[in-house]
Amino acid sequence: MRRSRVKVIGVTGGVGAGKSTVLNYIEKSCNCRIIFSDKVANDIKLKGQSCYEPIVDLLSEDILGPDGEIDKKKMAAKIFADDSLLKQVNDILHPAVNNYIFGEIEKEKAEGKLDYLFIEAALLIENGYHKIVDELWYIYADESVRRKRLKESRGYSDEKIDDIIKGQLSDEEFRKYASFVIDNSNDENDTKRQIDLKLGEN
Image 1 (cartoon, helix red, strand yellow):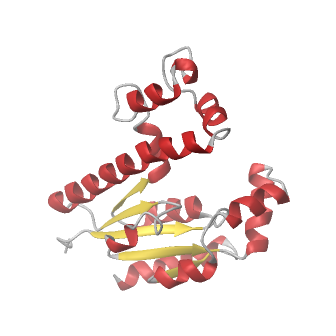
Image 2 (image 1 turned 180 degrees about the horizontal axis):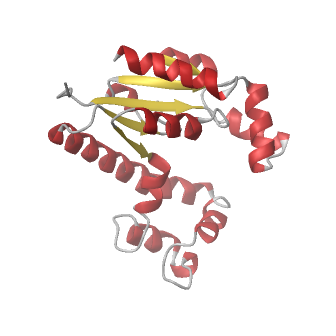
Image 3 (image 1 turned 180 degrees about the vertical axis):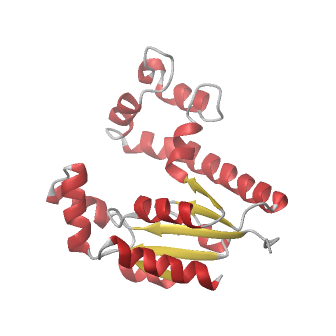
C-alpha cells in the first residue's frame, strides 16, 4: 500500500564522501525524487530565472558568454578574487535556492505520489535544513579514502584538499545532527547493503 506521507530526507557529507554514488543507487531503489542543491543553484542563474538579473547587475555583463548566459568560469574568476562579491552572490543565491527547495517540498507533500524526497546539499546543516527534514543522512568516508578519490577523480592536490576539508564541518559535527550514517569507505556492495537495510525499515 502506498504511504500517503512523503518522507523528506536531507543528505549531506564531506567532499569526496561519495554522495552522488550513494544517491544514484537510492534513486534506483525506491519511489523517490532527489533534489541536488548545486543543480538548483545553476538553474536559477539561467536567463529568465530569478537570480540572473541580480547577479548580472552586481557583477556586470563581463560575466556573460556569447549566448547571453552567465559563464561559470568568468563569474568564478570575478567572485573568488573579491570576498565581498562572493558574499553578495551567496546572499542572492542561498535564499533563492532555499525558497525553491521549500516550495518543492510543499508541492511533493501535497501531491503525495512519492515515498521519499531526498535533498542533497553540502551545506545542509549550515543552512538549517536539519530543522525541516524528517531525517538527516550523513554519508561518511575515511579521510584517506576521500583524499584518494579526490586525487583520482578530480586531480586535486593535497593543499587544495586541505583547504576544502578545513572549510567543512568535522565528522563529529555531521554525526551530531545525523539520524543515520552511511559508511561509504568500503566497497560498493557494503554501501548498498546499508542503504537496503535502512530503506527496508521505513
